[in-house]
Length: 64
Image (tube, rainbow, N blue to C red; front, side):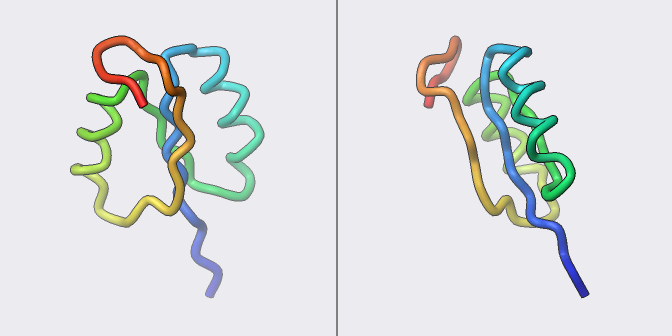
């Protein structure tokens, strides 16, 4: 049984998130967030673990 890993992509740039999701989607389940606050909310609501987080360091509201 091959279980797909989950990656959270956090970036305030829609373009960057889109590019990363295009690269990752065939091998991973990808979750997106626009900032740190959204990322934490999505992590709390996840029913399965997130295996990796790719995030921008400088974002509005709450950064990396």
